[in-house]
Length: 236
Image 1: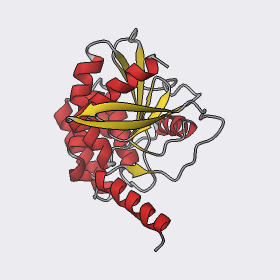
Image 2: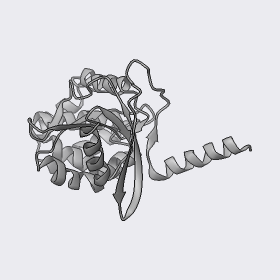
Image 3: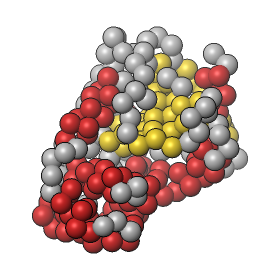
Image 4: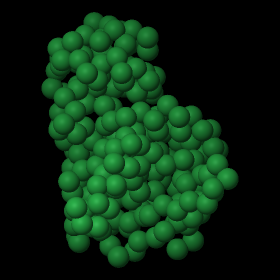
């Protein structure tokens, strides 16, 4: 094993260790510019860095699940997969503080977009479940319960997963009959495909990925990183 191969193996092991799901994609010159940045931040008392890539498409356009004040000076778009472990880590461990420090303070307008990966057999049906809950005004609680209960449905067969989703939805206060009918429909196929097309347009390399003020960053980064990126992208 030569040095390059050894280093590549270590990188793969490190990525798998934190649960980030990497995609076999390469940046497209039409959507990625040369305006990259390396941003420094402090988390847990340790100096860290995060790499950003400038994108030329507006990932916010067409997003369905939006929160935060309409006049917020910053925008963040998340591309996520309900079956991705790192996406669950962001949702359960980072997002509560993200909401408190960035959304509720009026600093950020946030959009969640679906990017179900082909290797995750239950990722699309869970995206449909969240969209069905959204029809009844229950997107946020359904989004959270899907991630928090990920280990209850991610390894099930598609049919059993669908039944588990119906069970989980009862905890969000939705009308069960309407939810079940919606879950068995294909009414959100086009919307999910549009989200995936938006993710492909910015050339995602992992889930979760975020477009912060037009800059792409990958991974379940901590709140300090988001705050540093916002400062950096406001001062080009």
